[in-house]
Image (cartoon, rainbow, N blue to C red):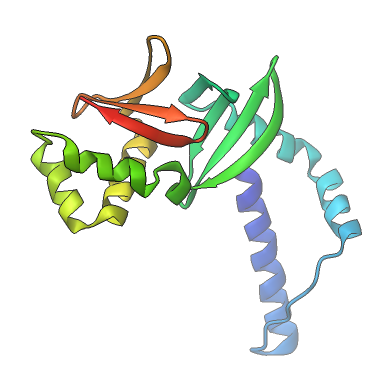
Length: 172
């Protein structure tokens, strides 16, 4: 996250400089592969630290894909795949794929669903997905383990199973 902020700061600085040099016109630059490599070499330690921060998630999960650190960002989910103490891959998962409609529609079948969740369902499936993601972002979901790990939405006593990188099933 720190690295992203740093990149945005640099980009803003370049845009401000371009605006001063060119008046109100903003110049768009193409960044070639050499420049990208140079940037990575220059900020190697910061990039490495940013990757390590992904592993400090409250949501470290073991499932059929292996060990994953889930990071709930503003617009998407960042997943760091871990193996033997090493980050082996990082993927971005859109929230639409993390909490698919098939999963959300299961909430319509739950008897005695808390009134707050019923209200969000009435507002639409997209709004309901936002409420689920918000619960993850605010650490209202807790990882529990039985045969398989699952999330417990303690506020509503709902168990949510995950398969791969998608929520699969909800149970009371």
